[in-house]
Length: 274
Image 1 (cartoon, rainbow, N blue to C red):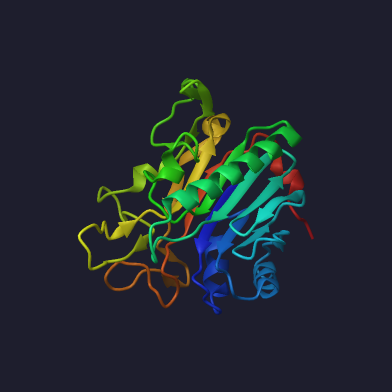
Image 2: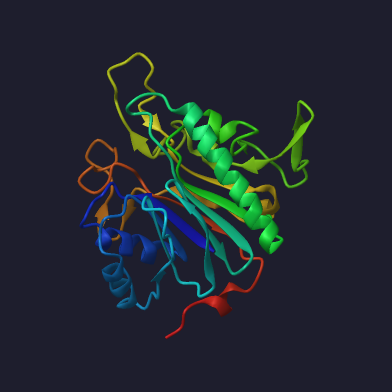
């Protein structure tokens, strides 16, 4: 299962880029934030290339749009900031677009939203008897932020092994561990060092931000293709960066991200065939 997420920054003419990204990377599930182009036209455009996508039900979450080539996708919990999709009655895909700090610090508010969403994720897990959970989206904070790293948040650790204990205890309360591979993409060992660039006129400004992230549950660690986790800077039809190497704001102010989770089950039987 190959998943792509992109904050398309309300670009009303972005379908060509999206279709190219889906085709270039053999994407199965497409998650978009701030998508303002025509979803029906996107699916039609993909079908011309024999890629059979349909839109998923995200009613109740205007900030997120989801498309997939799997037949069995059921909408779970939806609110302003989150759309949970149950894929093949086995995987919980939690798609998020959280509030930004551009107009003031909202660490505490994000953490509260995340706690509510994680509660709903656990309910979905109990419903289908599975802890195969993938969290993806524009979290609008760095991996070391309260919401992303706190044990009572997403608990997205920078290092987690299959053999590690899946929980840890803090003040007598147990918390499940999640793995956040986006830590490994920060810094200048590889390009780009983040998904969003902003040079603010203030003393604290990392300039590159890893706002768009993928976080997976301990149960899925054996199935994550770590080499597939990447920030995408180009597609067949265009470079997505400007001449400075930053996201081209004429397309979007974010770079897309993707990952592949090797299928536990035979997903090929669930693909749409025409």
